[in-house]
Image (cartoon, rainbow, N blue to C red; front, side, top):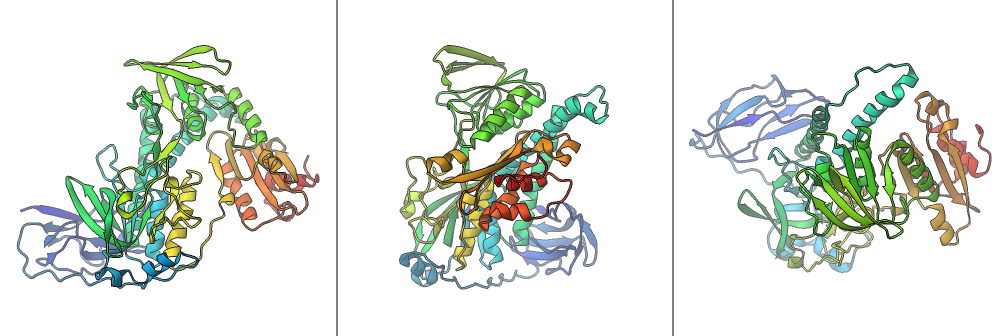
Length: 596
């Protein structure tokens, strides 16, 4: 007898138990795969438990009214025994009529209004999302909230060989990197700054394995949380590689390959959210041991004595900061002649000064000639900004020279789509491709490769499919670099506004003049606000400080609602708080800061 356990799924990070509701099946009944067997009630949601396999419900372990916890066995399914009664066919899910989105091309509107009639048969799903990163899983959830029958394709397999949702960001990007940044930052504070607070630290040491283990535990919770949200919103997870395979009438065919088999599914609407991957240097193999990209750099088992980083962008600075704080001698090689050239000049100067003070060595304007590796070291030959030949020897190398969209092997040509010369899928201002009912979001389309930008685009597309009229102001999408201090900005830089001939005025206020910053020992940095010289509308906000990633949100709200600097200056801010610096910078725009 082949026995499959039916277990309590992960509830959520804050929910530890649930109450059993009455079983929908009894022992001896036949069940089909994914058929709902029972519901669990928590203080937040009612969670459905599907059958993990077809077969016979051989044994019911837990009864209605019992309190159960995650991973407890609820029942046993025998996948080989004959049932006492045939399993009933699952009831068809109610279908919500597709609504007409506004401002769409005529061909697209027609296709959306009558897909079933055009194809002669109903699609398996209303929406299939390819990719479950922040853009993909949020798009799937929003579409499901709006009543659509949704599936999401994801092929990610973690280092333990388990399928996981969340894509690059949750598994080897945003979430794990921030966990290591936090750990290394706390170590450096304990090592260098706790003494200033009257806290003496003796025999301070780093356990890299435990630090990495904590990072992995956080990743497991977050990715498990996405699985919980999929179950809560009745989203089908199609495990494997998703590839467009042409059309069936007005419906789209998607082949999902994994575990040596391929299954085909159809959908009325497709959202491509396959994200991006690290760009590698030509002829420099990444083994994630000696030469690493972002994934390998998050899994070092020890602190390298000397670490080289190629690329002084967001990822290079963040990962370089992690290992520098833990004791590595870090040298960063950057091809561009300017440091953080896309940021405001004031941020560039302050960041360069602070990173140099911290011990990061950054060489600008370099040209990489050759990279040679051994089993335990790497040598990078390059020309410096003056054209002189140099060699950098290190124990490890992190290659961080940008990212490229994951648009290969997607079968785009099967429906008449193609990526551009850089690998991006062309879309309009509402993320619609030239093929009606096919959308692309996140790292595979124009604009910044930011998780929160992808999330907003996912919501936008789901609501367009529902017939709503959402809008994204891309000028109001914030950027953050999670170094210490953090760097965040939204809107335009002063140099860009001057180049465009815009008359502006600016105000800047230092963290060192803020009482809260003094109290927590975080006096580095400032907030700078740029406004229109005539209308006072806020055009850009630039922050380098502790908690800049949180502080920037106030600026985003202000700009989204076309606020003036005077508006921020007249809003009462809590005292003492870092947010007061935002108000003071706004007041400084009209040269009336109060505390300097």
